[in-house]
Image 1: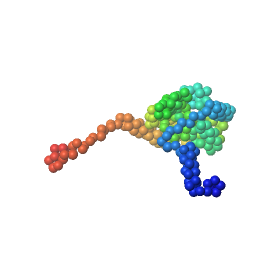
Image 2: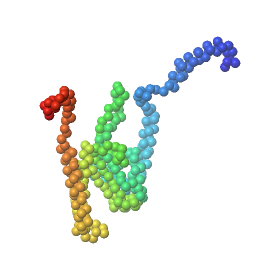
Image 3: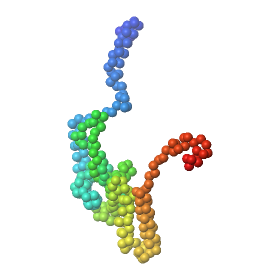
Image 4: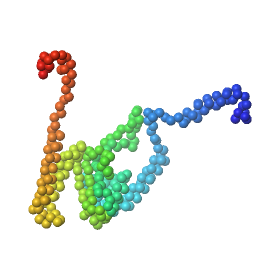
Length: 273
């Protein structure tokens, strides 16, 4: 540039200054990163929303086509236990981001457990208006969803499926190879939910069990009796722990500074005592 247009140093300096001002005033300001404290809202165009909705619908229909007797068995158990219609449960499952966990559960040597939570979840209204601070009004709403059990807080009902072997789960063996159960821990009362499940469901079922496999004597076998006694004792301890937690006395923190700030001699300590 210097050799072609401005061979004089004075002209070059002037031109450079003008160029710097022009760049600073226009192009550079467009690429400066925004302050990390500034909140940005991503607004999708109507075309983008339509495309996402279309893709979601295609995914749901593909999953619906995969549903067979195994899924129907699980849907039926969930509907009966949570008091939802089978259609509601089916729609929830095929719309869940963790739908693939079901297939992993059915696979040979697959997942040992499959969990569903049914509890209040903050739902954003589709037509919710933004607040002055950029947030939206979120309302709690009951929702059924698949979970690994390690990322969400458990505050409602947990429905679980457990495998009894490493065999592949098929429509013909799902009722024999998969056990279903529920914990009702509404409002986060997990100890009460576990206590109820063991005392009202598991222990009565165990004590009415006739076939104990290799233990031909059944309930007369000393090892089985010791096992049932241990389970009873555990439930009793669990119940005592829960009651102690519920009936605990919370002592108010005392500020003893007002009593000791003016202590100067032994007689003051005696008086304070």
